[in-house]
Length: 67
Image (cartoon, rainbow, N blue to C red; front, side, top):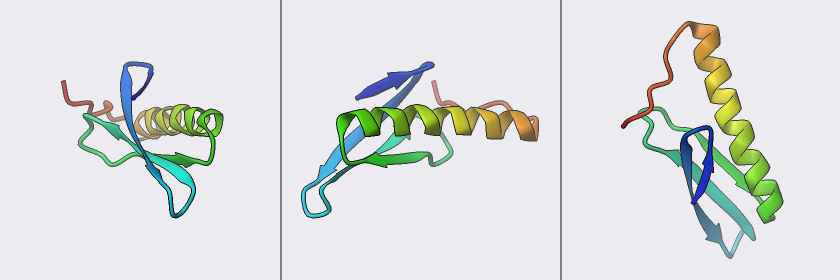
């Protein structure tokens, strides 16, 4: 599990593709990320959360995090 700005990412490893893929959980929206290393995965997760928050702000919407 990854955590950033109050969001949690669930990660799995795909051995055939040789990469980690994950999803930000507890959202009504689908926000995903992937990487080939732990460092790349963590950065992609943080970028995905930041992009999601920016997208919500641009649309004048509250992020729809499920609590």
